[in-house]
Structures are given as C-alpha cells and as structure tokens.
Image (cartoon, rainbow, N blue to C red; front, side):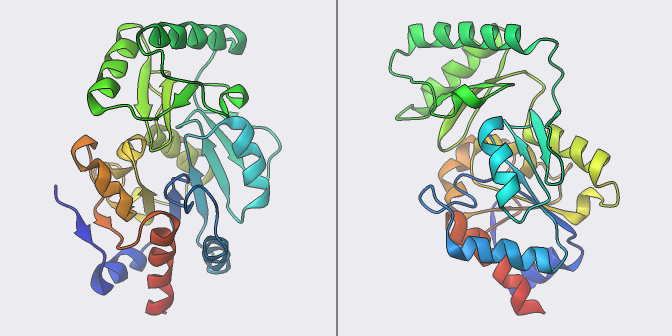
Length: 258
C-alpha cells in the first residue's frame, strides 16, 4: 500500500465523520523531543471542538500518569498497550494480564541481560525504572538487521519485541497499541466506531494502529517515511510536516474546513 499525502479533499474526508483521535506521542506530538506551544494550542482546539484525544504511547507508566493530568486529553495508554490512565481517574487500568508484577519485572530483567550479553552497547532507557509491563532500552545506532535479531531473540524466549524512534521494548507477546486501544474504546468510549477514530503515529511500534482492517482512518506524520520498509501496515495518509508540526498541520486542516 502506498502512502498518500494529505490534501484538502482528503482532509475533508478525514474530518467528515471523525469523532476521536488516538495518537502516538514521541516523534508525533513532540518536536525534537519537546512539546511546543503550537501543539498545546492544537490540543486545546480539539478539546473545544469536542473531539477527544487519547495518547497511545510506548512511554512508561510513571511518565504517562503525570502527563495525563496536565495535558488537555481524555486519557492515555502507556507502554504500548500495557496500561490505561483515564483523565478523570487516579489509578491505572491494566490492559495486559500480569499475575505478579515483581516476578514479571524479574523475568523482563533476565531477558534484558540475555540481550545485553549479545549486544553490550545497549543501555536501559531513562524511564525504565518507572515501568510496570515492559522493559526498554535506548534505540541508538542499532541497524535494521540488529533489530530483527533482537526480535528473534525475544521471540525465542517467549517475549514480544517492538521499537520506536527512541526505544526498544521487551513486552508480553499480546501487548500492542491496537489491542490496547480497542479495549479502551470498548470499555470507555463505546459510542465511537473504529471508522470514526483517527490514529496517528510515526514509527514501527505504531504499525498496528495503521492496520486498515482495524482503523481505516490513519495518518503518519512525515517522519514515518523513514520506516517505509519496516512497517507491516502503512498509514492511509501522510502529512507534509514532520513530528509535532505534522500533527498541528492535521488539526489546522480542520480549522480551514470550518
């Protein structure tokens, strides 16, 4: 499936029946790793238009639990589908079934050490200590071949593996963004159908959000083009601008159509 650039006609189609936006964060909402004033204004504009925004990120439970209280969003899914933080709640909802967190974390740590024995250059991510369901290390200078080998190693040990523009994730095999989002939509937003949900992302761990059989309306910010050959599913449309500017571009189209 080829990428299609967003134009006015496509934008009109996107916004016609859109009722909710589910978006990745790093590389999609951020600009060089930070939120911009334009991004915050775009989120406020969506809130004023009664279009709920859900963040669907690979970032840790600890980081996301704070963000959901400060950003104008309806909730956030952390750890690639591991947990959900409703904006009006004070406790996370586990989306992955984990019998004992302590044992689970130890098994993840053991798996990470096995990977590190073959890839001594990898290092735990800064937010790994704030995680519950997965384990992360920085995605620095790893080639596609090395990432594929890491995936194979995790699979051989009974774990799933994915990566974004910033991190690699060791995770339960059934844990991913689309599965988590579908569960959250079912339990918290049953009034919306999948065709009314716009998914937005930028990298391989967003791939399931681009599955047209699950979410027919999807957009990649322009830096998603860096991963054209690594995506099992490609977004239906791609913005002209990269990162958070691409997300703001998408929201700006709505303003122009009003």
